[in-house]
Length: 480
Image 1: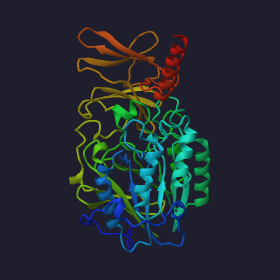
Image 2 (image 1 turned 90 degrees about the vertical axis):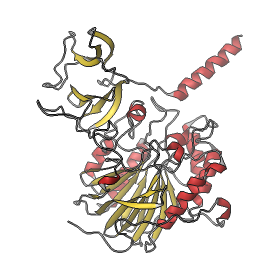
Image 3 (image 1 turned 90 degrees about the horizontal axis):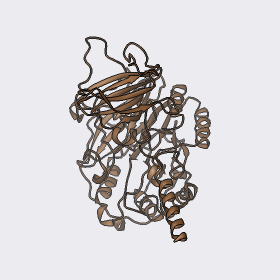
Image 4 (image 1 turned 60 degrees about the vertical axis):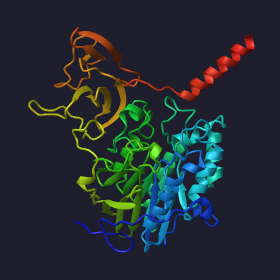
C-alpha cells in the first residue's frame, strides 16, 4: 500500500461553505490567462477544476448557478498548491435554436471562463460545432479557435504531469449521428507523439466523450442508441483502449457528455492502473438526475487526489487517490452510502460482465444475455435489446428499442433454425427476431449489417437530411 500526502493534497471529508456569489460586472477586468499560461514544469503541485458540459443558456438572468459554481471551485482550491487551473470538457451552449456553436455562444462562454481569472484549457464537444451561421465544420472550428485563442488539441506539462486535450472535429460531416465525437488522424498522431515524448511520465487525458472499454456507463436510450457514446464510435473505437494498454502511464482520463452525476457505482472506472472519470454538469436544466457536480483534481510530485464538488451544497467529497507510479492502481474512495442506486435498480446501476450465467446461477433481475458472434453479445434489459462488444464489455448500439413483456428474443441461422446462444458463440446466427410468445409470431427482425453486427442506425445525420430538405424545397420553388 502506498501513501500519497504532502503539499496540495487534502484529507478525506474536506468541505467548504458556500462563498459569496460575484457576477461578471463585479469581477475586475484584467488580461485573461490563456492556454499558453497553463503549463509550468517547475511547479511541484496543482489544483485543477474540471467542468463538464456547460450548456450555458442564452439568457444572462439564468447564470446564477454558474456564478455560484465558479466561486465554489475557486474557494475549494487548496491554498498551498503552486498552480490553479480550469479545464472545460466541451458543449458550451444550451439547446436553444441557433445558440450552441454560434459566435454569440462562444462570446458568453469566454466571458464566463475568463471570470475564473486563471489559465483555462478547453476542448470541443459535439454541440460546439453545430452553429447555424457556419456551413462547414472547418469554419465552425476556426471560429472557436479564434475566439478562445487556442488550438483544439493540445498538451501542457505541470511539474512531471503531462495534460492532453482532444476535440471532436465533425458534426455536419459525421457518417451517421451528428453527435458522434470524432478524433481525426491528425490528433491521433499528435497523441501518439505526445505519449512517446512523455517517456513513461504520468499523463492525464481530457476528451468530451469517454472511450470504448473505459467501463463508464453510457445512456442506452440516447448515446448508445444513436451510436455517439464513445470516441470515434463508428470508426475503430477500440483504438483508444488499446492505446491505454500500450501506455499504462495514462493515469486519468476525464470525460463528460452523459450529463450524469458523479455518484453512480461506475462514475469512476479503473481499468488496469488507469482511472476513467465521468464529469457531471453545473446547470440544473441539463442534469439527467438532478445533481450538479464538477471535479477537482489535486496533484503533487507523489500522486493525486480526485474530489467531487457538489454545487448544491458547496461541499467536496474525496472519490479517488493514487500515485503516479504506473504499477500502482488508484484507490476508489467514494463512500458506499453516497452512491445513488444499487445493482438491482436497472441498467444505469447494473454491473455488466458480458457473460451468460452458468446453469443454476442467478443473473441480474430482468436481464438476458445472448452470444451473437466471437466478439459480440446481445443484452435484453429494461425492454431494450443492446449489442455489446464482448472484449471491451461495452454497448455499441441498439437492436430493438422496445421489447414487450410477452415477447422473447431468438437468433436463427440461414435455414431459419434457432441458434444455441448459450453453448456456442452464436456465429451461426444471421438474424435476430423479436417473437410474440402467445402467437409464436415474429413481430420484428434484424439481419446482420455491413459490419457483421446487429445494431441498427436509429439516427442518420440530421444536418444532411436538413440540407436535402432545403435543397428540395428550393428546387420545388424554382419549378413552381
